[in-house]
Length: 535
Image (cartoon, rainbow, N blue to C red; front, side, top):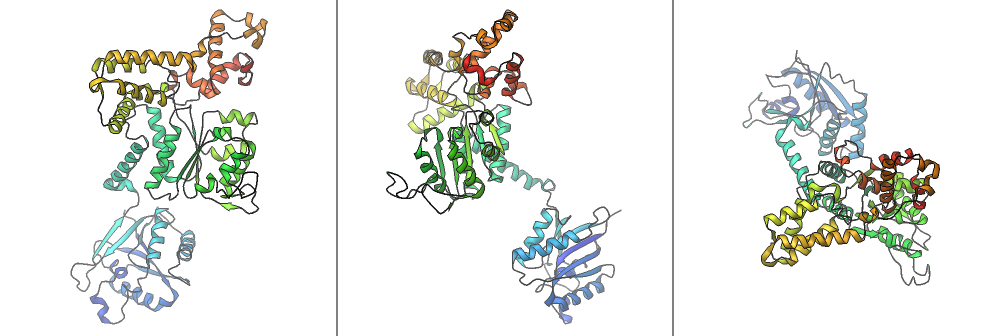
């Protein structure tokens, strides 16, 4: 059984107007809703301002004459200014919240053809948020006006799943945005692609702080800038992108660089300085290596994020700056919080959206498209196209995607490698001999530093565990533990060590928490991460 139709709409003070008999010769949108032979409006909630009560009574009577089945309830709204958005929305919201909607027994149409533009927008917003349930109804006049001609009534369901064309356009726009964040690189790693998909949604829908975690060279700075450029293209930011590596900030200059200072506030302060936070107003501030900030700067940054204002050095008056913070770190800030090196309240404030960017070694399937992308960049910058021979390409990718290639510098290592190959290639072709020389160079590079160096050197298990516990270990367990500890001693953090140790199996896990897996392994042997420096 079809549910009765209930229409909610404003009285049209111009379109519904008319007192004499001639009013029937014009199209009146509110009356037309009751003139359709193929639909019967059961009830109409007709909203009107107090000074238009007489017109509302006429419209009610005219609807009764053409559709006796339709009950018209006149709903007066006491509006001082029908063009004041806040007032109109508040009155409509309060009325809708008090209205006894019964969606199981009735269907609701919100008429958006009549009323001021402000009223129409408010009605749309209330329908979109489902405060007023149902669909929108848009009426239009007939091509030729004749008495009793109802015109057209179109229903609009704000559920986009009902509109394939619109939904496809939204999907295409999202795909374009994701491709923009990835610079058009057809990445294949499922975890990385899912991560970028979510970052795209957050980037265009939120101004809350975002924390990017990952090893040096994983692309944190690049991704932060692309997020800003995406928001800028959507007209969501008008200010600049301001970037600073917090590891370069030291002493009294750190506070001045970030928060600015007043002239004469300290020796050498010859003039006022706005500081990077003020420079980033209405834009984005990327604080790379945020874990390197001192305690004073952390406290001031927390206030600036929460209150949008702060004191420059030497100032007795606060300044304001509204920016979005994007932070980057290669450290495990959770450990820093536990050990008192990073403020817990600041970490809680920037930890709403945290994304752990995997290193290149954890994304071997993405090396090939990134090599192609880097060669394309080289061609555009140097006006010289360079390509691999088939055998050379296979040899390079075989090594680059193997466990031997640790990519300790991540994309910086890959970019440098491709640049060397492209520069040395004669005739625009990279042969096998050139690839073999480059592989030897990379092996030499990683042998001198990075995680590969961790395989050498002894670990004093007796000092760490005690002779009795070491004696109880099987040789297998002892060798495994020593190997794990060598990697841990060279790693920057617990998470970094976990990424290296579980680089293969992590790709098969639906939930990735390398740090927790490593912490549990160490705990099984009675070892805490903080004690490894003594090993």
